[in-house]
Length: 440
Image (cartoon, rainbow, N blue to C red; front, side, top):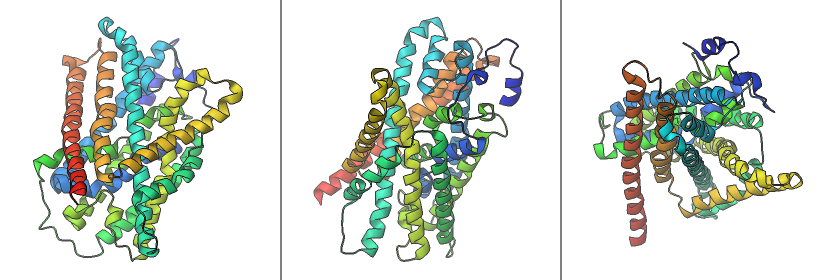
């Protein structure tokens, strides 16, 4: 049954959070869909061929679809739990961390004392995840610019770290945008650039005859954790789900079928699986952390693709940074006087961007950072926490034969498997790369 029907069946006199929700700059369904798609697709989409090279093409297709379903379901249960908590708390909206706290506070008595702890863990996971995403975006933009400069301005040879510093000022200016409604405009532009890049990549993929015979159907089992980490990174945008849903003009349209979530996740799975599969067929084990880095540097379409992806990620950056600054703002607002608020906001955004760029400068390993963020942070944020939170919130109503409990045990177990195995493989890769650099 769709969410729209559920909302229409709200009992008379029962608190309806939508009736009390006041949003300064509400977003339409279209803009919300654009934000969700852009929150997930970006550098993760372009890492699809690399993921398939780790898994083999058959495991890649099946795994991508399954992980897409799991990630979409985890977003669904998080939003549904948040709405249930809103009714109990009689609040118009709750963010991610507040939802976790409320679920524990209204769950089994033995767990209620951990409500604040659950909120802190969720907040820390959010902050760590999106700082990592901002670092990845910094490195990807810089890598794309460096390729173009190295080819067309041969007299200028700079390491990628310098380009991270060069884009610092433009990123600081762009991240001064405050409202999701305005960020949706940048998301739309970023989506257009991303689709253009996607089409150009397909042009090069199908430009010559593809050799299928040497491509692995099933990859090395030891590399499957790297595959799962990359796909989870590409599929998950869960940190922006609650801000987007809370900012919608018609939030009841977020869940259900058809809905914002269904349309967005279907588009994400389609784009990722097609580019990952055919990109692997074209480039095989030579696939890099972004397929644009595999494109020739002398052709104008390829040059456009490298420029488009840099612009796409650049316009996506403030959407990802929104989560980082939102956490900062919640903890500082109560201590800031009204006449200093604008100054603190501007300074906080600048310092936040500088911090994220600084990490990118310190560790500009694109493929490894993508895997690490996907394995560690997104596994916790997008799989483990939603499974636990729904179980706690529905403890008195776990369904027939406690199917909700069994289902969430599987989700949490999958999340921990991705976390431990993905982090282990990625850390070993980083150690090997740094060791080889030291030897050279």
